[in-house]
Each structure stands twice: as structure tokens, then as C-alpha cells.
Length: 310
Image (cartoon, rainbow, N blue to C red; front, side):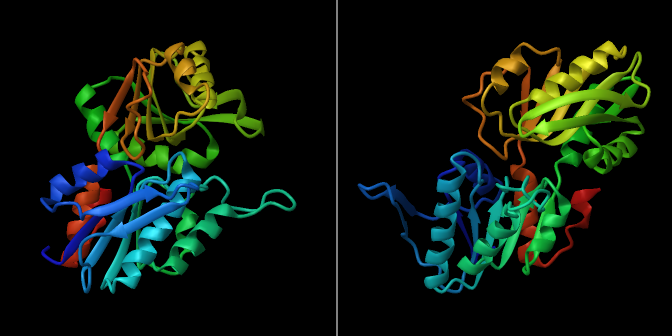
């Protein structure tokens, strides 16, 4: 572990500090500032020559600035002759644009992958990509971590009876089914249609939720329109209670107001994105830092990561 250097970007210093504490490795002294015209300035103030560098940067809002800062950090480390550049991206931006589903639109998730590779990344470590196939956009190793074991442990400790794990759409059914199997719970899937971005119309639910304690599982909660509508519909269908376990708390626009006025009993999220400034009364944050730290340890020691997904 002596050959590791941890470098934190400015997007989520609290998470980087937690990972540093878990590994008992101090963060590398780094200058992150701006020139007077707003351009980002990056400088690594410690030698990283022949070191295994891990750069920690969540690509949350402001996403474009955080992406550019990450690219500059990678380039700085590459030019400083680092032995290996591992990029820890707890939240991968532009992941919702992962295919060409309309004429004349970009595949932004692919473009971002190419930018990270071109800058000099040797490995990507990320958490719950919006679509698992994004791993295939990279020509370098991608360690794809999931928060499902954390949610599973949390829900086990609640000892909820008549538990149903609910996917908010067909695309998330695989994720919800994994958690349902782990907990020995039933599975339900919400059928919905999205007429335009950040707008959702909920239709119906496939599965029995009457008299059940429902837990909605998803990778992202953004404006919370889908989540709040789903919770209301489940209660109308006779659900006893509705909770949500969401990996990435983007929580933009009207999300805070919607959630505070919703029928959700609890919103459980991880700290892949900082949410300290989001005053949500039912919010519960579980740290992903111990999982990321364990991944880093296993990469350095050449050990399998399979146990982290069980």
C-alpha cells in the first residue's frame, strides 16, 4: 500500500476524506483553483513518479466543470510519470445518454469514456452505472461497484414483514430482482411512459403490493417526479408503506420540495454525490467509502472483487 497516492478532486472532498481514512493513507497535496477568467488550474504538489495513483472525483453538478477538472488531474499525473492512473468516479455523468434513440443525438456516455481514456486513465472504478453496458464503452478495465449489498444489509436490519422490492421501470427490473432474491422478498415492476425528459406518467404496477411494505430500488433520483408518482400509486394500490433505496441522490430542481411533500416514509441514498445542502426530512445516507476503499485494497493486492457483489 506504500506505493498508493490518493488525489481528491473538488467535487466531493468529504467522500475522498472518508476513503482516505478507511485506507489510512493521506490525501496528496493538490492545488485546485481558477485563473481570473474562470479556467481551471490544477497542480500536484507531491511526487507521484512510479506510484499507483487513485484520483477521486464524482461527476456531479456542476458536471462540466468537474469533468474538465478530472481530465486535467489525469493529464497532470500522467505527465508526472505515474505508474498507473486509476480514476474513481462514484457518480458517472451523462450516463442517461447511452444510446442513439432519436435522430441526430449524441451518445454522451461513450464520448465521456473516450475523453477519460484519451486523458490517460488506466482503470475506472465507478458505482451503479445507469446502464451496465456503459462498461463496454471503455477499452480499459472498469470496476463496476453496486450499492445493493449496502441496501440489502440496511433493509435486513429493519426486519420488515411482507416485503416487496419494486423496480420503477422495466429497465431496472434486473437490479430490483437481485435485491429481492437476496432478501427473500417478492418483486414488483412499475410500468410507465416518459413523454419527455424529466417528465413521467405512471400507469400501473405488475405484481401484488396490497398490504405489503414496498421498497423502490433505482440508481438515480433526479427531480424525484418518477419516485413520488410511484410511491403515490403504490399506496393507492393498497401498499402498507413505501420506502426508496437510490444509489445516486442527484436531487435537482424541485426534488427537495417534492420529496418533503411526498408519501415516502424513507429515502435511503449513498454518498456518491454530496447532499448536505438538500434538507429532506426522510433522507438517510449510507456511505459508499468503505466499499470503494476495499476495492482499492483488492486492486493493489491483486485480489478478486467478486465477494463485494455478494
